[in-house]
Image (cartoon, rainbow, N blue to C red; front, side, top):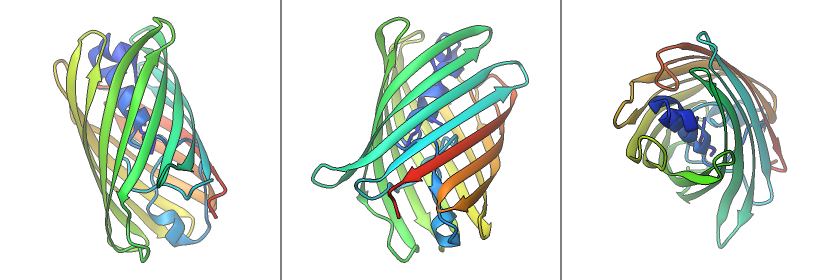
Amino acid sequence: MKSCHYCKSSLMKPASRLQVWLSLARQRALATLIIVLAPAPQALAARLGGAYYVDDAEIGKPGSCEIESWGSFALNRDHIAVFSPACVVNLGGPVELGTNLVNLRSQGEKDSLVSLTAKSVPIPIPSNHVGFGMAVAGAVVYDPLDRTGSGIILNIPITYDFSERFRFNVNFGAQFNNGDPRGLFATGGVGVSWNFVPHWSVISEVFGLIGPGQSNPRFQSGIRYSPTKDIDWDVIYGRNLTGEGANWITLGLTVRIGDN
């Protein structure tokens, strides 16, 4: 669930930091960045994760783990690098627990963030891959440079599977920022995932961070290659990801272990 898909400067530079946080807790608040997906088109069809902001209502089975990693580069020389491992444990029900390690540069300033994430699925997507599901995800963000808690994120991913190959996701939530500006921000987004041929998917999303000093909407669209059930490679074009109005290119890798 990570959901993270970004940071301290975001609310030093109002848009950047908040966005980083959101993308990290992403939405997949707890899933991570290297996923190894199955060759079967249906298994690849809907799962999001990685560098995408909009999360889906799905986690792996207990005992499985994911590692997500990606780098985003803007034409204005801003960048975001993320490493995000997570595992699913049984706490009376499956819960995905993970962390996001973020390094970024925004408007000439560098920063680092660490977040602890969690995600559960009270309403699972039907096993026949047609129907509705809902998850609850959250994250606590820590700034290791300032040695302070930086924020709290809550995200509700809602998913509707039209088929094994096509998934529609809606996210809404909130984020409290303890920096400058200090306050509560609303979050939201809409995304689709289409597995158009075996091993290849197109994923697109529009999202926003609503509050003082924010610039919306924000957009990403990319192609995913999943050579196996356990690996995803992503190449993504983004616009205004942290509210700065720049064009971005993201390269990502996701690997999943023990989810067969």
